[in-house]
Length: 344
Ligand SMILES: [Zn+2]
Image 1 (cartoon, rainbow, N blue to C red):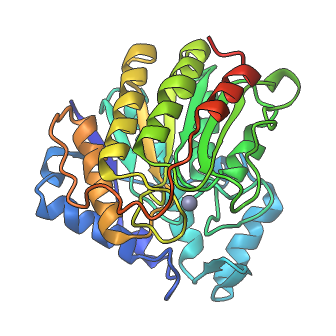
Image 2 (cartoon, protein in one colour; image 1 turned 60 degrees about the horizontal axis):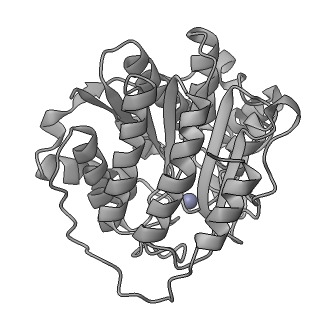
């Protein structure tokens, strides 16, 4: 398997200071991939800056101008969670462009699958505003780019970040060409992502939310992947799968209450890869969203690459969670979601 990755030091220049979403995240990932000699097995894909036209595929002109202007003035806070430095506009254009490049490389057959190791993350960014550490919606921009440039008709986005990707949902809410599926802790930030949000008009059914109670671990996530995501993906028959890959779902991550392990992420990636192999010639692109425990983040991303490379042995040095919370029974919830979406 030829697996690509996108990385560039420009992503470190989005300087957020002591913020939980900081450059040390990518430094930890790259250094772990180097130490474990995994990086040598991957194909480097050069990112580029997304053009203004590409940003406008998703965002309003005023939003793009505002981000540009805040950077030009030296940075600042856009909301209580989201901060910019002078180089953040450039880094954010490269984060979107990096996800586009990973997508192009997969569609053109340069690599079988790819992971864009970028920041700032994207899935909370809406057409009109930055929020939740996100400036531009990297995955949504790559999806719109693939729809227009390659004339694709059906793209599946799977979002396993612990937070709901409200931005991505909003962008594609009335677009039947994109099936957006999100697993997330609920109720939780940003507040959206209920079962009843399913898309509008001709796109009814192409937003699929799996709002999980805090405390879910590997077994509950696998249940969601096997009983909801897999049948929904098969019915939709995508030509490309994009993944908003957030690792704040890990039990050691302090931003949320989920109890997924590195092994659990590997199993979720395995199911996703199997779906891509079955449905769309293996076309599979990951883009980094959250994940704030550096050790869990780096180890989980290595495990993701291992699965993409076809490795069977996954190293999980962090192991299973200390079971801080009771594990909820998600069977009734999964049943209800299957009914709402009339899944086979
Ligand atoms: Zn998140």
